[in-house]
Image (tube, rainbow, N blue to C red):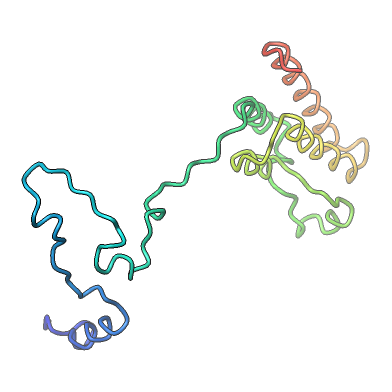
Length: 180
C-alpha cells in the first residue's frame, strides 16, 4: 500500500482541501511572555492576545464545566419511594408507558398519561420541585388505571395495592423525618 494515497486519493489533495477550510496547519511563533520569562517566573497571558485563539472562536467560558443541577432536598426520599414502587410485585403494568399498538384507544380515554419509567426520567432530570408534585404523578398513574379499566379488573386491584403501599411508605417516612 502506498503511503501517499488514502483510499486511492492523493494525500496532498486531502491536505490542500483541509487547508482551504481550516487554519489547523498554521503554526504561530511562541508568545514573547514565555520567551523572555525566567525559569520559575509566573507568566500571565490575556487569551485575546494569543494569535489564532480569538480567530478560532474559543472563549474562556468553553472550559467551564456546567454545574449539575442541584438535587431537590427530598430527591433521595422520592428515589427511594419510586424504586420501591418499581420493585413491587404488582408494578409491572405501570413500569413503562402504555403501548398504543396494544391498547389502541388508551390515549383517547387517558389525556395525561403517566408511568413509573417517565417518573424516573423526571426525577433524574430534577423535575420534581417537591414531594407533592412527585406524589401527584404517582397518583396520576393509579387514577389513569382506574379511569381506563373496569372496577373489578386485575389492573385496578394492582393500582389500589400500589397506592396503599405508597401511602404507607410516605406516612412512615414523613413521620420519621418530621416532614409535614
